[in-house]
Amino acid sequence: MSSGLPLSLAIFVSLLAVVHSVCAAPLGSAIPLSSLSPSSLASAAPVSATVAPASDDPNGILWTETSDVMPEPMRGTLGSNVLGPQNVPIDLQNADLLAPPTTDSGNVGNSKWPFSLSPNRLQTGGWARQQNINVMPIATQMAGVDMRLEAGAIRELHWHSTAEARWAYILNGSVQITVLSTNGQNYLATLNQSDVWYFPPGVPHSIQATADLPEGAEFLLVFDSGDFSEDSTFLLTDWLAHVPKEVLAKNFQTDISAFDEIPGKELYIFPSDPPADNAVAVPSPQGTVPASEAFSFEFSKVPRTPLAGGSVRIVDSTTFPIAQTIAAAEVTVEPGAMRELHWHPTQDEWSFYIEGTGRMTVFAGSSQANTFNYGPGDIGHSNARTSGHYVENTGTTPLRFLEIFKSNRFQDISLQQVSTVANIVHMRLTHALQWLALTPPALVKAHLNLDDQTIANLNKTKNTVIGPSKAS
Ligand SMILES: *[C@@H]1O[C@H](CO)[C@@H](O)[C@H](O)[C@H]1NC(C)=O
Ligand SMILES: *[C@@H]1O[C@H](CO)[C@@H](O)[C@H](O)[C@H]1NC(C)=O
Ligand SMILES: *[C@@H]1O[C@H](CO)[C@@H](O)[C@H](O)[C@H]1NC(C)=O
Image (cartoon, rainbow, N blue to C red; front, side, top):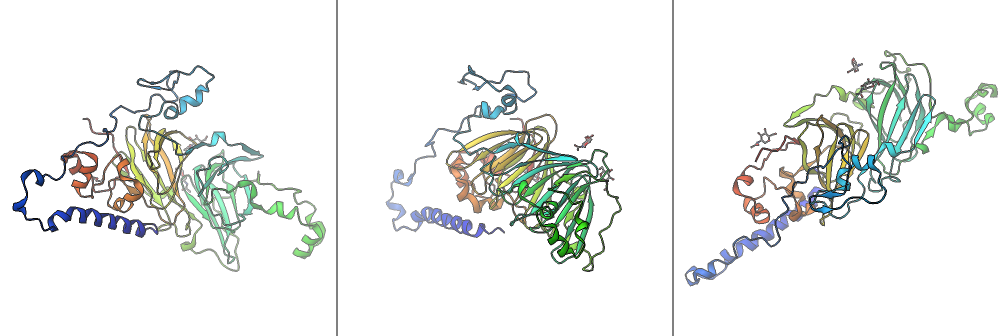
C-alpha cells in the first residue's frame, strides 16, 4: 500500500508477537495447576487505573466569529480575562487558541494560515497571494497560491524553475489553459469551477480566465514543495526582456525591429480579450496530447460519495494519471458532523477551507495537541505520521474543504479502520482518543477501560465523515 507501511507493519507484528508470548508464558510453563493456590491464580490485579481517566469536561467551541461576546481566555474555572491590549476580531475567529479545550497541551506548531495575512500582489487584470514555508514553517511539503484573473486576463506563459509541479482547483469561474508537453505535443482545455489541472515541472503553460462568469475566475494553486515562491517562476517576457535584442533577432532569424514592442519587464498577470469557449489547440506537428496524458481533469463531474454526515470525492493518479505528486479529496461535513479521527501514513496533509467553519485538533504524539479554527480562505496543515486529527463542523452551514497530499494516491487511515493497526506504533496508542475496531477487544479494553458494548460498536468500515454524536 504505502512505502512506509511494511516497516511499521513489521514493527507492529513483532509487537503483537511480544504481547502474544507474554500472554502465552503461563500456559507454556511447567507449573502443575494443582500446585497453585487460588490466590496465585489471580496473577494480575483486576483492571484498575494507573492514571486518572481522561477529563469529561465539555470541550466545545466557546464562541464563533459572529457571537456577540467579548472573547476571553477562560474555560470553566480555568484562565482569566485579558487586562492588556487585545485583537478582538482575531480572538473571535480563533476561540480554540484563546480558550483551548482542556485536552490540548504543548505546542504542535502553527497549523493555520489565512490567505488574508499574505501580502497580495496587485496587477492590472488580477492579483495573487501566496503561502509557503516562510509564513508556515511546519508545511514543508506543499505551498499554495490564491490567484484571481478578470475575464480575459492572462497569467503569462511561464514554467517552474526547479522540481516543482503545480496542481490547481478552480474556486469560481472558468479558465482556459494551454500547455506544451515535453515532446512538443499541444494541449488546450476550458475548465469550470471545481475542475483541476496539473503541470509537471518544466512544462511551459498559460492560464486565461474566460468570460463564462463575467467577473472572470479565481483558483487555488498548490505546489509540491513548501519553499516554492510564486515570484521565482520563469516568465517569457522576463526572459526576453533580459536578452540583448540582437541575440533575439539572431535566434529568431528576423530583423531586430521585430522586437521593438516587446515588454521591457515581466507582465506576470495582464488583461486581454476573453478566449472563445470552443478554442482548440494550435496544430502541432508533434500532434496533440493523448487523453491518457491530459493535463486537466473534470473533477466537477465526479459524483460526491454520500456519507453519514457529509460527502467526499477524490482525485488522484488513479483517475488523473499525470498528477503523480498531488492527490486530493473534496470533503463536505454537515453541521454537527465531523471528519472522523484519522491520519495519513506517509504524507503531510495541506488543507484549504472553501465554505463553512470548522475546528481541527492536531495530535502530534508526546501529549502534544492543539486545536485550530478555520473558515473560508484558511489553510490548515497536519504533519505525516505523527499527527492524528479530526475536522469538526462548528457552524450552522455545511463545511467544505480540500485535503491535499504530496502523493500519487489518496489514502488515509481512520481510527476505526483495519489498516490503522499497522500504524499503531506511530500513533502512540496510550494517547489515542478512540479505538480500533479490528484490534483484539481485550487489548482495547486493557488500554482504555471501554465497556463491551462500546467496543462491540466500533465500526469496521471507514466512514470518512461521521454524523452528529448519538444522544447519550
Ligand atoms: C462566484 O462569483 C460570483 C460573482 O461574484 C458569485 O455570485 C458566486 O456566488 C461565486 N460562487 C462561488 C461558488 O463562490
Ligand atoms: C460550468 O458550471 C456552470 C455552473 O455549474 C454551468 O452552468 C456550466 O454549464 C458549466 N460549463 C461547462 C462547460 O461545463
Ligand atoms: C458502519 O459504517 C458503515 C459505512 O458508513 C455503515 O453503513 C454501517 O451502518 C455502520 N455500522 C454500524 C454498526 O454503525
